[in-house]
Length: 105
Length: 427
Ligand SMILES: Cc1cc2nc3c(=O)[nH]c(=O)nc-3n(C[C@H](O)[C@H](O)[C@H](O)COP(=O)(O)OP(=O)(O)OC[C@H]3O[C@@H](n4cnc5c(N)ncnc54)[C@H](O)[C@@H]3O)c2cc1C
Image (tube, rainbow over all chains, first blue to last red; front, top):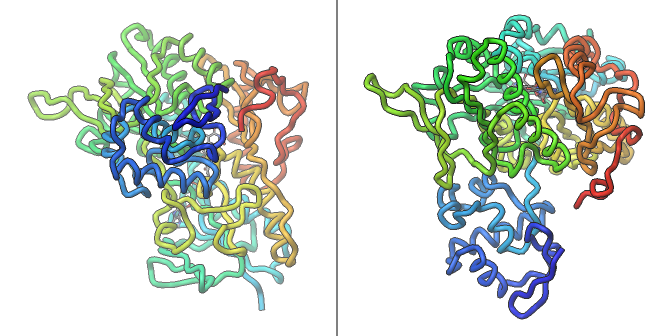
């Protein structure tokens, strides 16, 4: 666990850089986290994905996998990789302030 | 009038559930009807051995009806939809069947056509899967003809049935080519969307170590976007490339791909029953549908954070049948499935590993089921014999719905060594 500051507020991240407590996240933090992942500007399409991630987490207790994102968020897997080139499920989860998606086994 | 329990699917989960229920309830109390679209029950764990010539395809198949106890009605029909409001299953032939309690056990389907280029002229030639009987049989021929080159094993995405089977395939491929004396001519690569060889850290380390030991290259965080074949003079057909969504490429001469899995398509056509991938939304402990109290699901069909494995269907079956009893008696459900899973992992050279885990506890070293027993996360001959013995147990004990001595639904705690850092896995 480490503590970092986004939008002037300290937040706790786990060892892999995911939010330990999603309640600490605010929308104002997202652009700052995005920049750390080389995403300079969050477009409406990015926000569509981030909003979906938050909603899924609230309902299911874990973020969606890339495939579920592609099926249910209204953004295709191809476009997801354009929006979040280093892997949508993990990068979007970090920017949306939710823990690492568990992914079923 | 009789009340009716309808079970959709007569694979591992549906068959063992029907038999357990039939033993428990008299025919005069409940009519039990099992529905399936075909009559051939395939012993799926045996599919792993077919490509290597270690199992005969026809020996893995038995008629479905004969696995069901007397007094169970078997109906061959293709399910088109479940109407949850009307408590009725509709079939593609236009017929329908009402139920008091419904158990969904229609498993998972392979969706190779969802990946660009996976099903093309090279399918069954340079690009294979061993996840169904025709695929495993075609791969057997391809392996026999393979004289060297790049063999790539790839998991397209999760969830998948028996998530260790592709690893087992890689281990057995190493053994197979050594036996044929051409191992030095074969480059083996294991390609996975995960960030390591397996989902949970302790097992990932052990299994990753085994890959290394056997000279299998590991490529991680690779989500299969498309399969592209190289053009040779006569058209496509030399080798090809697996291409991930982020543009990474893995070249191959022979590819063994585990395609995307989804629930049965009719689940998607049944308002309220399934999730995005057509798996049935159920409570992970009670196995009751989130949409209706008289609907349950188990096995591969259930959308749970547990493995899709026959052992899971077995452990779930025990809990499910108990909960159906509570529901029928109008009592609150108290049976709770803990996510218990165990899998033998064949590693070649007459050895195998065993892993045992549940929702909370990752696979750990130690012994199963107690301090004296089969070694966990460690290669041994005893585990290999256990894997082979499982086929007999499957037909004669698991499918008939008998309890296996000493092997209950709840995951045993005794016998597991808990290293300090694994004692409290991050939730
Ligand atoms: C290569 C391989 C290796 C494996 N190894 C192991 C192992 O070592 N150990 C282990 O525990 N598990 C293993 N498994 C997994 C195991 O076989 C499955 O998890 C298990 O069979 C699941 O049982 P099920 O009843 O849920 O689904 P299934 O057994 O697949 O049964 C589903 C049934 O539903 C029927 N159905 C589907 N749709 C319809 C419809 N619309 N209308 C009518 N009928 C329909 C199908 O015909 C089928 O009979 C392996 C699987 C594979 C592929």
